[in-house]
Each structure stands twice: as C-alpha cells, then as structure tokens.
Image (tube, rainbow, N blue to C red):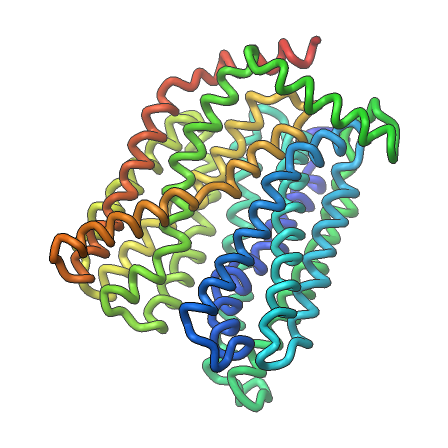
Length: 434
C-alpha cells in the first residue's frame, strides 16, 4: 500500500469517527448513569460505583497486559487488520447486546460492558499501528490529527442526537427516557460497525510477516517481544517519551474522567455537565485538525508543550471557578488542546519506533494509556481527604484536589524536554537494520 494514499487515509481516519461513538455515548455518557438508575436500581450508590469501577479496571488491565504481546504477534503474522476487525466487531456485538439487558440485571450489563471495552481498546492498538502505513513521516502529524478530529465530530454528533432523544423521547416515538437510552446502545453499535467498513476496504495489510500464521506467528511474536525487552539499551528515547507521556496523559485523562464528579462537587447540575461535554466534543473537532497543521509548522514536541501549558492553566483556574459559565469556558479551552495533545503524541511516537514493529510498540503505547488516569484520581482523592481532615469544607477540598493534577503536567513536561526526536529516529533506524 502506498503511503499518503487518500483513500487509505480517509478509511483510516473514519474508523476514529466510528468507534468514538462508543467512547462518548457509552463510556463517558450513558452507561454510568444507566447502570446506576436502571441496571442497579435499588442498590446502594456506593456499591454500584464500586462495581462499575471494578469493571472498568478489569477491562483496562486486561487490554494493558495483553497489548504488547498481541502487537508482536500481529507484526510477525501480518495480522494487524485481522486483529482490528476481531476486536472492533466484538465491541460492536457487546454494545448491541446491552439493549437486551433487563432492569436490575447488573451482572450481565457489566460482563457485556467489560468485553465491549476490551473490544474498543484492543482495536485501538492495531488502528494506531496502521498510522505508519497510511502516512509518511512528513504527514504523520496531519493524518493523526485528522483521525482525532473525525472522532470528536462523529462521536459528538451521535452523542448530541442520543441526548436529544433522551430529553425528548416522545418526539422520537419512545415511551420514555429509559427506552431512548437503550436505543442509543443500538445506535452506537450500528454506527461503529458501518463506519468501520471504509478502513476494511481501503487500508491494506502492511508488509509481509516473517512468522507465518497461527502457532508460528504466536511463537515468532513471543520471540520478538522478548527481543525488544533485551534491546532496552537502544530504546532510551522511546522509554523516556513513554514515561513523559504516561505522566502528562494521566493528567489529561484524569480531567476527562473526573470533570463531571468535580462539577457536581461544586454544585453544578447534570444538564450543565452534559452540555460542557458536548462543547468539548465540537470544539475539539476543528482544533484537533488545527494541531496537525501546528505540528507541521512548529514540530510535534513543541506543540505538545503548548497543550501542556494550557492544561496547567486549566488546573489552576479550575480550582477557583464557581459558575457554570466558567465551566463552559473551561470546556472550550480543553477542547482547544485535548485532541491535539492526543494526536501529536501518537504521531511523535510513530516517528521514533521501528515501522516493522509498529503493532508491538503501539501495544506498549496503549498499555501506558490504559494505566493512565490511575494515579491522578488517587492523588485527587488523597489530597481532598487530607484537606478535609484539616477542617476545611468539602468544596474547598475539591478545589485543592483539582489543582494537584498540575504535578503531572509539570513532571511530564520536564521529561518531554529531554526527548530528542532526531535521536529517536536514528535509534528506530538502527533497530530496523538489525
């Protein structure tokens, strides 16, 4: 497949449009609310929160642990697209099945959700690894940003429609909001399945595997993964970047997963928070694309520094805001850089890894991503409890806790400063020639 082929780029980017509907409508939007109100009806809220937290942890840790090995197997067996199709359509099937779960059947809902999360996250390993096949080095920033931009727009459009259905169910022929939410699970599954087709049609499997298929590919993948660990002395730039990425993306993901909780803790209403989420989605669409051009002008690393600086500002201002209008402004500011920092991190990483091992290395990248937003919420919670123990109010404790996230952006930015992109490219070239 020729790099920079327009059809391949279009098909690749449209997959982000497809699966972002799951991240937005299911993971961030309706599943947590519906799980508490419908599938865990009558259950203590603390217990239902613990169950949902455990499910998210199981799904995330499962993908994190298997990502590098699956990536190595896919590299050796030339099976990136096959793995992508398997995980994506497993996620689609599990998402569609959520429609059938009855009230109070929280266990079935969680099992389906865990497998859907594994499908979503597992597919992303191989989707990311195909970036180096559809785009050449000079277009990595732009194409990566196009994918995130498409994801923000596609996920935002379907989420907006689903929110409209739940707020006005009668206009769509539903008996009530619960029926509209259940239908939204169907809409996400269909959306994900249909808009994945262009990738299947236009993006070809890159390269030729050297490990054969089946058991041979598995054995070759295990040997490759073992060899990568033994080559650690040649991977200083990659691992320094991954450590920096882990820290600053932990800050980004913590803001994503804790923003609603923080907003509620300072007295904002649920509708205000949903509107803020939609604002971030639609602002994120053009700005993620814009960061692709910015990366081409300034370089990916410098552009990431700009995004980190904006997030530092957000954590400080967020500690002092007290109105929904300020929350909306912060949602706009986050939308300016959220897609950009994700897209350019991916394209910068793609430059400093061996192209023929892209699935394995993106396995490590996604493993780091799945372990992100682990330290941040713990730090927020611990900081809040410590401030509360000192006699301050719960609102004050929440404000101090959100500012503590700045530590991750400062530490991640410092480590990123020492990442030498050109040295990383040379290391990747050396590994490719071995």
